[in-house]
Image (cartoon, rainbow, N blue to C red; front, side):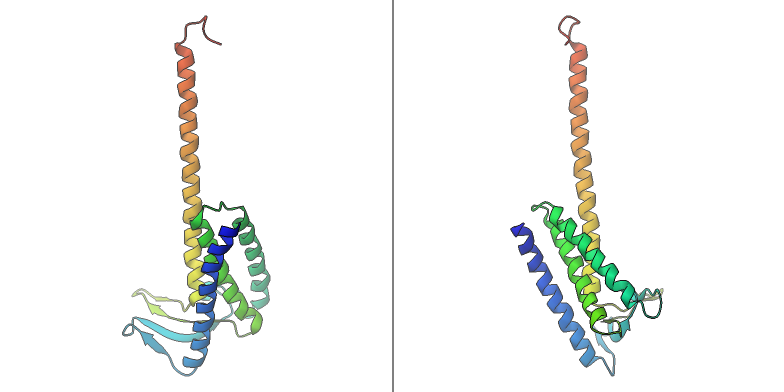
Length: 185
């Protein structure tokens, strides 16, 4: 469990600090004007998101819906972290990313009613704009993708293990069939 906590802390701490620092910067630097990175490729625009990730809305004041849902999700992720193998670094890292992002956005929801501070975007994709987001949203998204990959890898390993066990059992049965009748058990 100690190794899990070290991996968790080494992921959680920088993500939380980066999220809080960039949100504070956005509140100060972008309150009255927008900015851009990389020659306009990535616009920076301050926005307050009362909905879910990437501006998905479920009503005007969904703050108190998302607080308990986030707490429940954090509890489930904690259980998943506890049951994960200490050698499954991908799973531990991915859970740490999701928890970091969820706590970063939960902090905003609890501290004020304006919503979660978002500031990266909107990014023009040519067919529409990608919604405004923040560091916590990136951590949640990357962590969720990596978590799905870790489950897929685990399922694939189990499938291979089951396949090789089945092959061994079939080989044993074939060997039994080849024995003369008096030697068969």
